[in-house]
Structure formats: structure tokens, C-alpha cells
Image 1: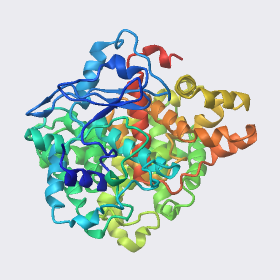
Image 2: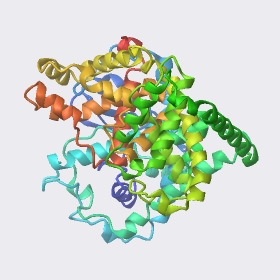
Image 3: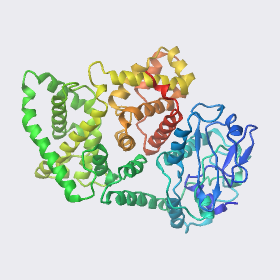
Image 4: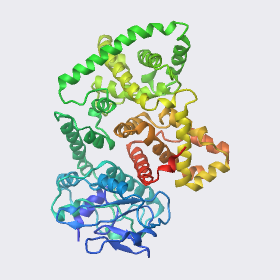
Length: 543
């Protein structure tokens, strides 16, 4: 039996939702079966009664949990297994990707950091899940909390890879719980403390951020950068103080070298190249051939993020005008299209924060540049921010340029893909939208054109782009799954709308102004699950 104190630590950190001492799976008869090496749960047993996620532990050895294949079901309800998986090769790759979803090193170090906490912080007879009744049954109040737990688990599953050093058998089992489908009743004495965590408990979570930064520093200090490892780490979020450097690497703007001198030489050369482009192209903005393009840019830039004072400053707007105008002239196949101006904002914010050496806690929305530094300092710092934003924007748009060519075929194709995907995973929502005569193009065009920048707060977009940059086709292919996840988020609200007008008003004014990193991670977790659920169905996104 796993140590009770260790389980309570998991639950207090919101890492372990269940009350049983080992990984459980739901059988066809609705019973909870313990998955151990002596009695593995057969896929044929769990297949027909499984809802959500099931985890089967194939082997418990002294090295810990060696193989934890995850099978996900997008639709609620039974999942039937007919003759096994469609593609063992693809599933094998997925199994390797998630075979070490729980980091034993991080959890073990957290346990050491939090060992000084008193037992009374966790409660005894009063410890139960928030919202649980006296008989241990979870009420509707706890559903949001359970979703948060599952999202956190999926977030970890998404990018943790195999090959970590294993702990001893008892430590590995105690520090690597699995996601499992559990019964609806929970032992009241085995639940969470209803009291909020104390300040000392929250302090024990700080080492994780330090550990994450240390992992990035280790990768970035290698003589030859391991880009695959860097992408894997970046998927689950990049520390704010390292984000600018990592984005330059993932975009291909900076070379994958650890030598600081080589890196600075390359960046200096590309910044000088951009300044020469400004000198050659920007004076043409008043020519008859280009004045209409510049006029449209000049109109759109002040409309960008109208509620953020930083973007209403003249020096910032002129910077954006130069970046967009020069990009338009260098890419005549598409030219400037409304919406491209929004795509500069995340890069500008990230590179400006690094240039001004602002701490992660400092709010940039109300930043007044003339008050932060002198005019001479601005003239020295902003050109590098502008050049880096231009080159990273160019790299991004090169991967989705079909979104902005004539008739925007890329967007039209992805809207059709989104419609087909939602039809498969949430048929009731799809039928309701059809009943209300709501076309997907009417609301999702902006999602594809602006990459959700108009739908989410900018801080959420920056976190979302951490994962986009770490995906090989993040802004093109993975974005469709994120949009599907975003639409499914509002499924119940949309199905409660009576007609076309109410549906469209909700879709165009979604209440995301208070979203933070937790909501973005849940969004990404669902998108990741959708992506891998359809990995063996290549026709599911046929336009």
C-alpha cells in the first residue's frame, strides 16, 4: 500500500485526483480493477465501459512504472475496441512519447522541499474533496476541479519523454501516480482538505519553477543545442526570463549554437540587414504604387489592442508600421492583409520585456516607454526589438502564407477541417449550430486569420505560442485542434442559445478576459488529446 502521507501530498499539490492506493481502471461491469503486473487489465475488458481516459500499467518492476500507454476517447460514452488498435506503429510512437509522463525527479525534489509541513495542514476526519457530500460522493461543484486535474495531467503527458533515471521501486510508485478512471464515490477520509493551502504550502511549489529554468539552462549551454529537447521542454511553457532567447531559436532567427559570441554576431548581422531594408523600402511608402498598402497599415495599427495603452504610443505604432510595410513589400504574393498586424504583438511584447530587463511580474500593458528610459536609451534598444520582431514574423508567416494569398485558401481549408473535426467529436453542438444556421466561417475565420489573438488576453497568447513554436507545424496544423478545443469549451453555453443571433453574439464576444495560464493549459491539453485521438485517422481532416 502506498504511503498515506505521500498521497496527501499529491492531492494537496493537485497532482493526484483519486483516493485509491494504486492505479485503477474501470471494467465493463463498472467495477474498479487494480492494474498490477500480477493482474493486468485487458483492453477488451476496459474498452466497452470506458469514459474519458484509462491508464493500464503493464509492468511494475524494481525500476518503477516502465510502460503506461494512454488511450483517450474524445466522445463521451463507451469506446469499443474491435480487433485492437488500427496502427500499432503509430500507437508505439505515442506510447514512447508519454511513457514517462510524470517526472519522478521533480516530484521527489518537491517532496523533500515540502517535508517540513505539519500533518494538520492536510486534515484527517474532515479531509475530503471540495464539494463532496458526507457519503463521499462528488457534487457538481467539484467537476471544474476534476477537469483542472485532468488538464494538468495531460499537459504533463504531452511533452514528457522517456529515458529519465528511475527511482527505487517504492519511490517510483509513490511519486508517479497515473491518470485513471475512478468510481463516482470517493472515500471521505481519503479526499482533499477543504481548507485552502497555507502560504508555506505554496512556497513548496516554487522549486518546480527553478527546476524548469535549470533544465532550459542546461540545454541552452550545450556546445551543440539539442533542438528536439528544447522543443520538448518548451511545449509545457517557457520561463519568462528565457522566452525571448528560446523563441528566436525555435523560429530559426538565431542559430542553434551555445557560443554567446557566435549568437551575438549572427543577431547583429541580421539586425543590420533589417536596418538596410528600412533604409531602402520605407521611403517608398508615399509612392503611388505602395501608398494604398501603407494607408491600410496606418489605419489598422491604432486599432490593434485598443485597450492596451502601450500600443497607443506613437513610437510603438511607427515601429509596427515599418515592420508591416517592409514585410508587405518583400512578399508581393500576399502583400499586407488585415490581421497580420496582430501577429506582431506577441513578439514585440516578449522582445521588449527582455530589452528593458523587466521582471515577469511587471505589467507591460500600461508601460510608458518615455518614463521607463530616456530617449537615447529607447533609440538604442528599440531597433533590436523591431528587427527581431520582423524576422520572427517572417518565419511565422512563411509557414501559413496560404492564409493570406488571394482568396485566402489556407483559412478556408482549415475552417472546413475544424467543422469536420467538431462534427466528429461533438455531434450535438454541430447539430445545434446547423439548426441555428450558424456557419463555421462566420466565427472561425477570425480565429484562423488572427490566430486567436482577438479572442484571448495577450498573456494567454504568449503562453499558447510557447507550444505553437515547439510544434513542427504549430501555427498551421496544431492550431486547428486548438480552435476545436476552444469551441468545445463553450459547447454547453452554445447549445443553450436559442437562435442564430444569440449564438453568434456569444461566439464573437467570448468571456475570456479573466483567463490565465491554467485555462490555456487545459485548452492545450484538450487539443493535444484531439490530435493524438485522430493520429490513426488521416482522413478526418480531409477538406
